[in-house]
Image (cartoon, rainbow, N blue to C red; front, side, top):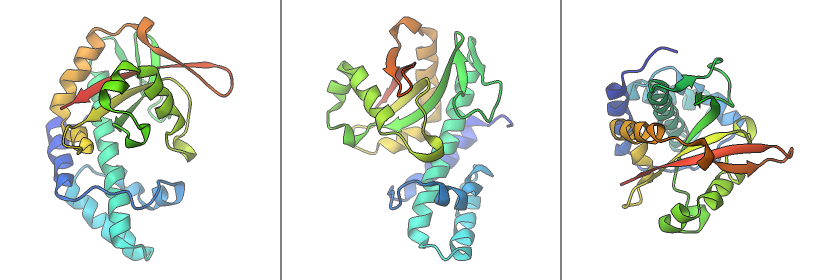
Length: 214
């Protein structure tokens, strides 16, 4: 995969803000296959055109499919930008296999999958509680992650975004700001502070949270 112009990505992602955020359809492998064009281009106008074409081709509800595809596109290109930010930092190495779904990069030799997540309402606790009880939130995030092809219990580094007005998802587009937060985290990375997570096969995964709060 080629390098991204992070400023261009940020500008394109912010175009999504003009539309309300909804998930009308639970993420699933079938609708993922219908919307795999989201990987083709970070250009928002191209995305809208592809959504309309695919919805017409498969007789899909346009509004439901729009929200499904645009949310996947937004999450994907934000994640690509974040992964590039990580991999540009000394001491962080990209995965040897770019298609490895369990590893995006390693920090000080420890492999991680990266996941940017909005602060989950389903957690049932406020931000102050979550920050004071990191293990509880990490275990919740593992237990409530996506199913299907996206599910795994390997090492994961969460970037959790929280916006005081409740529009948490918008912070995924603040690439320049996230870049500084990530650099600060890596500069003080301490593997002894990682949270150990038990897996169903009686192994141990390691995790941590980078907080992105505005």
